[in-house]
Image 1: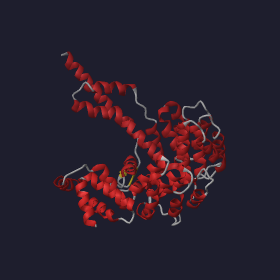
Image 2 (image 1 turned 45 degrees about the vertical axis):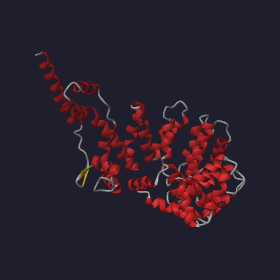
Image 3 (image 1 turned 120 degrees about the vertical axis):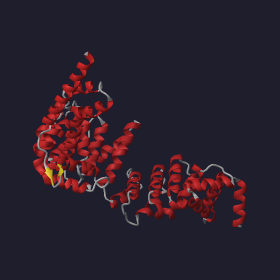
Image 4 (image 1 turned 135 degrees about the horizontal axis):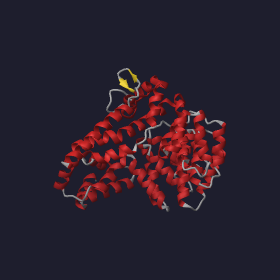
Length: 431
């Protein structure tokens, strides 16, 4: 009898909770065409994959709804788990799983999901979401765990939305400093920084927290502002004995070069043998090639020439960059092979990896790493199972490569694969 009464109380609580939730979310959700605002926001996350609409179409629909979305989105971002929800969720877990899980998801998790979607919607609206600034600023205090979301949206809004971000940057005791910097990092380079933001970031270059100083330098470089001071900050970081700080400076420097400088600028840095930027400019040019960016025909010869630079770091970066050019870099193979005997280990490793990244020679790495020593029948089974026949043909062609070093490397790959007897037969046949 007692258990039955307890179960009735739980079921009654479930009914009350459902009514409360439906009441809480009764706010009329804006719609566009045949979809609700939250549905369009979800499309921006999953468009082009599992939706009939593209991500761009989802964003355009949210912008079409415009400021009419603000009351609903503001209510969503202000969601906060109530004690009764937490308590009720605990009671649900006493029910059978088929009832407990869906009811718990409904009471405990639904609002949090809407909250996250609402931040995405405000971000899409950008400057049109300025009516949400008071609510976003208030959340920094009432729900500090949401600081990253709030500051990112405020940066996207721009204008007065940048004020709480700058306040966090200048307050060394603020727990939101890192989130504030991250928000400005995401501030598109096509949007210029205003004078106050530039001044604040310039002051941050001397911050005792060097990671944040390097971040400020990156933002300034990417927005073509105070570049000399910013680059000096990063250079100073390269000269430190602290390995962690030096790595942080290198990371920010690479991003700054990629986003803040043109290809002609990078090429000029690369060819300046007295510039500390030369190696990192080579890396930036390689990064551009890796994502398919078209670069002038003069870039690859300049990188190949840098393989003979007196600085080991320059040779290593140039070799790594050449590997990203794929087929077009195959004429540089002999120069990369020259570095296999370089006195610097990092250069040797970079040159070897770059050489095997060239499509013509990649088969050698595949065989030496993945194919065990096999007999003839075993190899045939291996080829059928893993489909390596094409790679074998590519490797076989290298036995007649003009460069003796390539022929030797290909021969060694075959030796590892089939044993010396097979290699001898192959060599005899070639003669």
